[in-house]
Length: 133
Image (cartoon, rainbow, N blue to C red; front, side, top):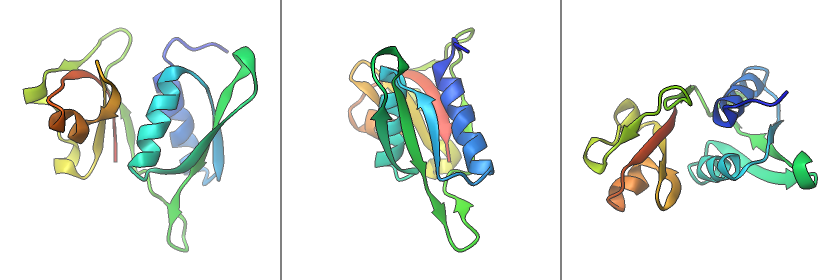
């Protein structure tokens, strides 16, 4: 099934895998999902990711992270902000703070995909893709 919103699809797959306490989950590989996975890894929300398959059938295998003996998911929530039907942009002054800085907003800027913190540091605005905490 081809989805128009690859980002929402990715977030939903991560959310479901987290609830089911899976070790890994697969997401179709696009430039966008690769960049988001990289940000999630750099921010410590996921353990790692690898790209598998070839040609059109490429996908990312994302390793999830849990804490404690009850295996509490590191990711408590993922929220899609800018949707294909309603894009949400933010200039550098109005970049959102997620839960007062506990969470991360993933922003698509002219310099690539980055966190709200990084975008603020580089003085960039852009499209607010999603929140994660």
